[in-house]
Amino acid sequence: MQNDESIPEITEELLADETLDPVLRRRLQLRQKGFRRMGNVPEDVYLAYHDALQQSERAWLKYKQTADWESYYPYLEKLVELQKKLLTYRNDERHPYDILLDDNEEGWNMERYDAFFEHVKKELVPLIHKINEAQEIDDAFLHQSFDTDEQRRLMKEILEYLGFTNEWGKLGESEHPLTTWISINDVRITTKYREHDAVAGILSTVHETGHAWFTHNVDEKYDGTMIVSGISAAMHESQSRLCENHLGRTEGFWRANWPKLQKHFPKQLEGISFEEFMHAFNKVKCSPIRTEADELTYPLHILIRYEMEKDLFSGKTEVRDLEKIWNEKYKEYLGVDVKDAKEGILQDMHWPYAYFGYFPTYALGSAFAAQIAHTMEQQIDVQTLLAESKYTEVTAWLKEHVQKDGAMYSSLETVKRATGKDFTPEYYTDYLKKKYSAVYNL
Image 1 (spheres, rainbow, N blue to C red):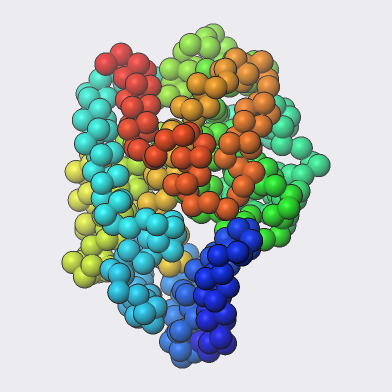
Image 2: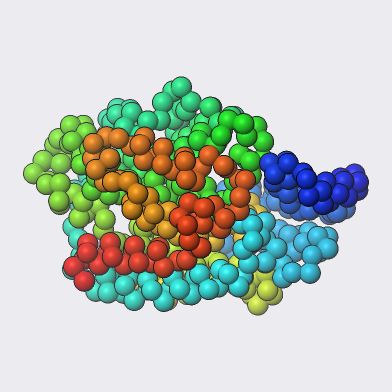
């Protein structure tokens, strides 16, 4: 793809100016990063890549439904081959996977992620094994039939509680919940209701409003710039995960919203105490599906994908072998027997859509969330505010300490500015161990 070769040179000259406005400097840095991804790629190579990407997307949609990995993998094989070729035009001597990781999360590479995931695995896998051996929690009452129209009526009350108003936001529905925006004052989110899950729609909505609040709370002077659109994947995920897990899964949140759930579904919840609800709500269950994973086992789903991507872009494995490797890792880490490719290797859209290096940001965002939440809980009484339906006072803290500056700083800088400390995964694993040891009386 031919580009004006003067653009990177002019950008470098501007960035060398020590008197350059800090906001303009950051905007140029973010633009420069985007240009480096494709700036030197020949047109024929780019077109071949784009064609392979489209074919991969269509093939995945087709073969996922029939769980047919053997028919799909040649498309992914071609896409990976061309992705590797694109990286050769970067004039970047780093390992190919380090380049992809940094594309998705500024400053992150295999060395950093290896240390992060090694800590997560060391601290959480033994706990998960203990929980698997513990007495199972009965959550059957949460999986009765919950009319989806009634769930929609309930959601109106939940949105009011969350402070997500039509003045700046709108809720819709889609197969996969998502967040998008036109401006910081026009943010759209979607959710998905499940007839046999009482709270999945609520948690999805709380998660997406976390993304929405981040976008909405960026200072207005940055609206329409890369300071809004350039927020890193892990940083954005930290805010959605914080809202979902550190707010939406807590006692304070449900002290305010349990009565709403009871009002809309009195028959299904008859005779169920608040304590029984919270106990069942926090059940750990090793699932083969990442998007259905509980809070504790979720990072292991990401670890599996990270290890596979790293070996793939290091030339240690071939695309054709990925399904076998996937199934072996799920058995080793989660004790799960994967039924077929639909609930296994073909479940995610990320690889078919060439989102290589993106998966690790999900776990990293959860870890950022834990450290930020720890600091927030020391400064304000989060649980009392949630129980008293003062959710927006919590989001106000997040705006002031995390969100208002958008992408002005890297994720590591943002975490340190918010918490006063360098990032460390101990906050994340300590939080999970404390919470789930209590749930299972370990």
